[in-house]
Length: 135
Figure 1: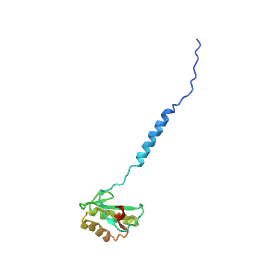
Figure 2: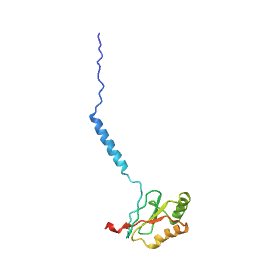
Figure 3: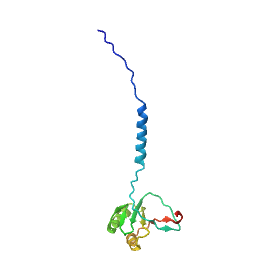
Figure 4: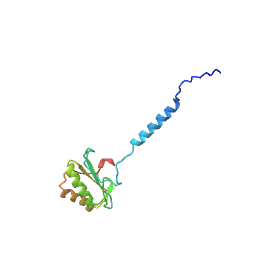
């Protein structure tokens, strides 16, 4: 009995490779678009002059229209903000604090955060507003 072994050439289907590459491209694009920054929906007040600052080493204190404070998008109390600011100022004194308040927030709620900053003698503070030319 003469058994002959057939030699088959190795074959890689290339038509499916383009589908896989396309799906990987879509996946990478979607993952890169995810925004990990937490924001509070507010209506910005307007300003006549605007100064742009860098995004490095920023701490955001949000105050919504009801006066509820948020630290980097997470709800907290004024005492928590004070403790966090004290710790941050001790470790990285160049960290800029952004106060972002809704246009309709009563000033007494913003004043609570300003009082904390004055008590800690924090000098790197910005008020985030909408440029008047955005209308």
